[in-house]
Length: 180
Image (cartoon, rainbow, N blue to C red):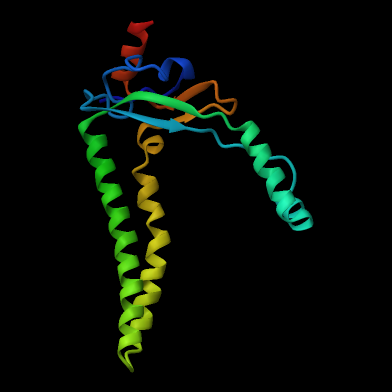
């Protein structure tokens, strides 16, 4: 399916109501096999230097930064975003890889520590423990690849009043145009 090269902006109020989104995937333009609810939030820029605020004032500086973040962030609740078979399969694949990496790393780490405690002279278990420990945070990469914002190419505007979709499919934009 051809892609729309522009950007489509939808009001948050519209995407927050079930049934207001097209029945075609925004990425591929294929018919949706699943409607998914999720939450989007914009990237929030906090004023001031993190190092000087936190190091100089400690916990109070961190609390001040968290309060600034809380006041600025606007969460967009998305209801019924259309996902096609390709998107659903891609999401399942990436989340399976992330789970395998995280739980496999955890099992390797804990298992090698237990085995090292029970046995003597198995130096290679330290390598297994380090590899398992390194594998757990690396699971964030496939987890991000399977995230709904990445799959849908959707993000919130900085002020949180609209949802921005980058390069949506023609079928998705055509259905939006016919609904308005």
